[in-house]
Each structure stands twice: as structure tokens, then as C-alpha cells.
Figure 1 (cartoon, rainbow, N blue to C red):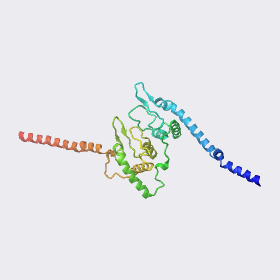
Figure 2: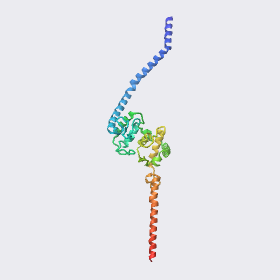
Figure 3: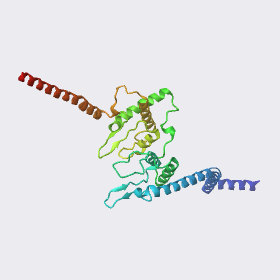
Figure 4: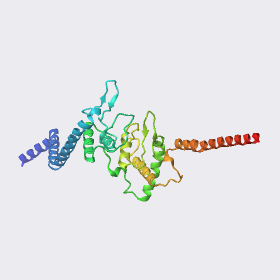
Length: 290
């Protein structure tokens, strides 16, 4: 009995030693690693392999259609005169590619102040591959999901409130370039703010997130995802609203209205005044001859 007590005491002392805690921690880590490998690793490995294959497919498309301006590794190309033929794509993210290529702005037909929208040159599968390759060059904004910009799961009252909030944000941040109803307008140095009424919501969200061309980027720190969604809701409401002002003149604002006023209004008055003066002169000549 005495021997058993001494053995139990010795074991108890060993358990209290620091090395015993380290061994237990190591055993726990090994167990967790084994469980992760057995349960989670196959799914993640399959996804990683799928992403790698998609990025490789995108790299092949990139080398054929994009590398002339953006470099073989997306590092950008500078001409001998120091002009930038194509910017670096490292860190722009998949969202920028999905927007630029999905709206036909890239690849550009020719160099200019900005890339205009045109029919897209790639189908959606190819765009996804290009986006995956550019995303592999460096971390950047991902392509948004429909839940990021859709109001379908909200009640009618919540949707109306979102539209009101979005209108306030739009009038504060966007009307200087896109005018009050999103019809676009001219910009300095040959650029232009495009019409954004009727544009697919995903592309509006990506434009807010990535800031294409001269547009500033509104990161989630500047505009929260909910605020971006509200802006898109406001623009969507404009498509269904009636033009209570009659002839909208393209919604281009005071420039178009001033032009119509001068040419159509004052121009007619000046012409009428000239006609009156000429008619009065002829009448006076007849009186003199008589």
C-alpha cells in the first residue's frame, strides 16, 4: 500500500510539471489537424484546384487579348516617351475585370480619354476566368453577389426607405458628374460621365467599388454596402418614374435648358423683331412714294 501511494504521488508530480502541459497541447494540436485533414481539407483542396484551373484559363485569354497593353504579368506597359499604355492590374480585383470586360469597355478598340461601353468581346465564362486570373495577381474587390444590391427580400416600406436614402446619397455625391437623374454629362479633357439609368445593378455596384476611369472609388469605408445598395435602388426607381416636367431634353440639366432657351426662345424673338423692323421700313417707303 505504501508503494502504491508513492507511485501515485510521483505520477501526480509529473502531471504538474510544465512538460506535461506542453505534451497535452501538442496532442490537442495533432488531433485538431487530423480532424481538419479528414473532414475539411478535401473540399478546400477541390475548390483551390478549381480556382487554380480557372485562373490558368484566364491567363491564356489574358496573354492573347490583354497583355499588349497590361503586360504579360499584369504589371502595366509604359511607352518609350513615358506614357502609360495600360495600367497595372495588380490589386484591382475581380470586380474591376467583371465591370470593364462585362460592359465591353475592355479590350479597348483604340486608345482614348476613356474606354466607352460597347458590345462585349468575351462571354461570361471567359470573363469569370479573366477575373480569376487578375484576382490571383493581388488582393482586390471581389465580384458582388445579387444579395449585395438587391431589395427583393425587403418589405415595401423598407424598399421605399432605401430609395429615399439612396436619393440623398446620390444627390450629394454623384449629380456633379451624372446629373440629377443619372443621364450623364461631359467631363474635362475629353471624358464623359456615362448614363447610368437602365444599367445592370451589378455593374453600378462594381463601378462604385472600383472607380473606373475618372470616377472616384467608393470603398466600403466611404460608402457602406447598404448605402451602395440604396443608391442602386434609387437609380432603379428613376426608370419607373414619370417625367412630370414634360419634355425632359435628355435630362441633361441647365446646359441643355439654357441652349433651348437661347436658340428656341430668344432666337425666335430676335427673328420676329427683325421681321417687324423690315416690315416697318417697307411701309414707310410706300408712304414716301405716295
